[in-house]
Image (cartoon, one colour):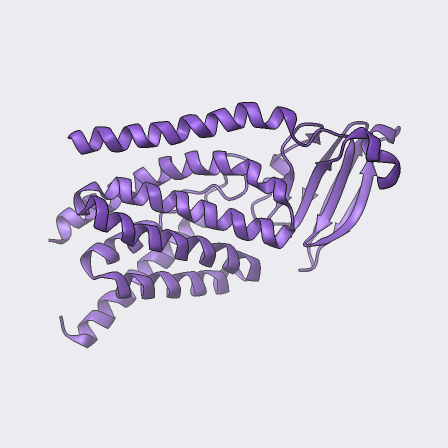
Length: 126
Length: 162
């Protein structure tokens, strides 16, 4: 019984640390307006989200013959559709400044918000 | 136990694990976070580990992952599973030594956390994205929940296997 309580408190502590990282960490991280779309280790597209006036979408052909349809709006980006089995990337919704990256594990595709605003010029527009 | 008898038993275990895996794959993901799942097939690994031993459990785990990836038909899926599977197996053996067979739920929870950590490391390498590690806290918490669940299940089954 004593060992149980010990173990439970260990797990509770780990959860607490995780919750702390979840709430504090995200705010300071991945701030920026540049979205980088990668397929494996190749960067296939870099979009400055603050310069998007008209929403648009485009299709990414993945290495395994599948596809992801990416939808871009001013300040945010999402995966609109995909033929991956779990469609978790679609359910993840928008990525924006300070949000978690969008990952499509089966397709090795990732959408990451990058950079401080000053590197926008280097990263380029759409 | 006779050698052929043992092989037969282990094949049945692998088969059960594969069926559980296939059934679980049909359950739609509950949360939109990559890598979170129940990991019910882990129940079989735990049972094999306690009932038969380390070598047997490793064999069942390995064959299950190889066959499951073949059925699912993705190479990347295999990489995620094998990294998570091997890491969780190591932790499982270690924790079983420390906390014993009675605390199977704790063994399983640590194993699930190790599984998710291993998986996320492979995902970070494959996608070349360090930011993936921001998902780690979510995966650790889910690992504790699903690990405790599968550990309790394995414990219940083992009670009747004696």
